[in-house]
Image (cartoon, rainbow, N blue to C red; front, side):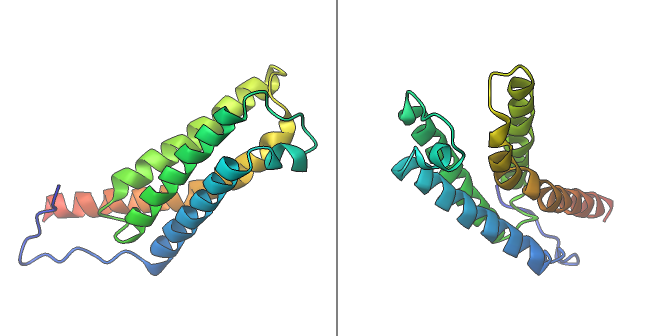
Length: 145
């Protein structure tokens, strides 16, 4: 969907850090996804955990995470315009850790995986949240004008 731009109102340019953060998230997610796809046992071996019975499930997760990375690269071209991609990404980066904590508390998932959660999800909360806040603020300013 194209954004309507009034002739007398020029939308603000996103800060350079937004583009950098989304590019970094995109590259990281694609690299992580490819590593899970091509070498599904590596993360388990590095953490000293038993290898999964069905590595295909881990490979599928890698594919999904890699696809998210493509979305972040698209969003990096104009973070405020492509805020829905950032929003969907933030949802995954919030709900994933919630699921992890629930199952780790139940003893059904090893706490060691918290390192993956930290780097795959938690570190992105602040930049994604600020991008969404700024996109919302800009949308409200546009509505007022």
